[in-house]
Image 1 (cartoon, one colour):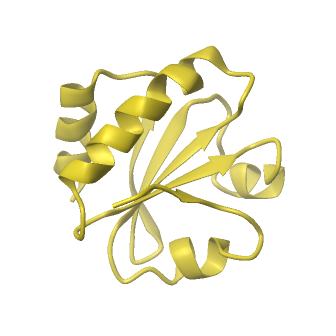
Image 2 (cartoon, rainbow, N blue to C red; image 1 turned 45 degrees about the horizontal axis):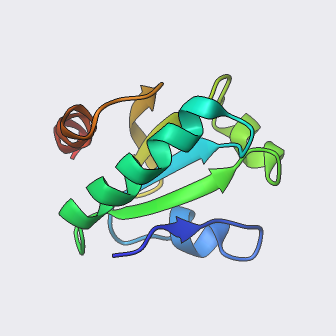
Image 3 (cartoon, rainbow, N blue to C red; image 1 turned 135 degrees about the vertical axis):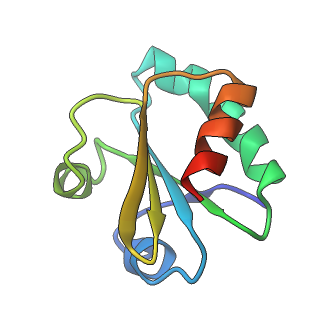
Length: 106
């Protein structure tokens, strides 16, 4: 499964209306830890293929969405089920730790 890149056109459909849980990665291209989290996020998405949707939201392009989720630092991952936040991960994690954290929220 590929990671979805969110924008104004697909945010509602991919996140708010999703039938399966969604993990949204709030990031920015200038953020070093975000750049390090990118490949880990992609790799973990393959482990949850078909069960969880993985999406990236550039906070510079969609600041209003980051604000509506109360994101104050990046990288921040927000786990949503039926459009309700069920978990939040702030900062860089190793692949196994990230996978375990996401699993605990499902």
